[in-house]
Amino acid sequence: MAAVRVLVVEDDETILDLVRSYLTKEGFQVETARDGSIGLAKARAFRPDVVVLDIMLPGLDGIEVLRQLRQESSVYVLLLTAKAEETDKVIGLSVGADDYVTKPFSPRELVARIRAMLRRSRGGEEQPRPLTFRHLRIDPSRREVWRDEQPVELTTLEFNLLYVLASYPGHVLTREQLIQRVWGPDYFGDDRIVDVHIKALRRKLGDHAGRPRLIMTVRGVGYKFGGESA
Image (tube, rainbow, N blue to C red; front, side, top):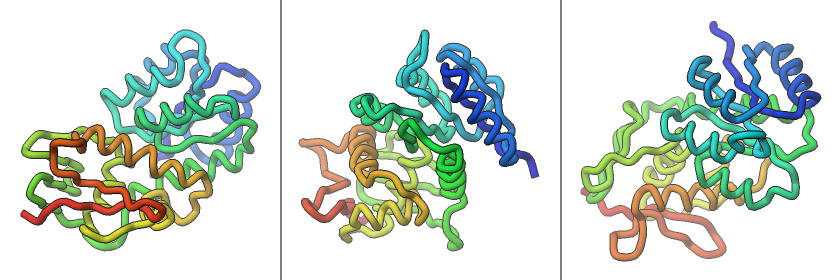
């Protein structure tokens, strides 16, 4: 079985060497870059399964690297952030990051987050079924979504989140339930990550005033899918 490919984009040489050494020891195939432009070039050539991306980079910063990556790839992206970078963290998640780790972090935590992300793509044991509503179609075998016959480009995690919500139309799912089904039972980050990805989903789906709402907030509880049956 081929080794999982991980690209680490980090300008701090000490952190970069530590992460590379630990990931290699854990059996990953690792490439590195120390600035945003080189990171983008290596992502295109190396075609990683996961990108570990620092926000504060020389040249192109991590947010811009992520933005450009998302225009051409659904690769898993894990952000490395500092505690003072709260705004950048939220922006990064809204642009399409799948998760984040706050510095200082342990290499063991980083590996656990990467393995958790990779497990999400396996899905459950049941064969996923297409979902069709009046204004939305979801094809899990092709990983494609259409809103009113217009294709909608989603990241892997956004697709998984939408599919889980649409699988239970009219039912309220709490943040904890969504984390269990989408991020996995071993996720130990902030449940606010759900809100950020819901916001991104709504924007991409055109889910706003003047159109039938697909994802509704149930205050103090969670979210529910409100699409009408076809």
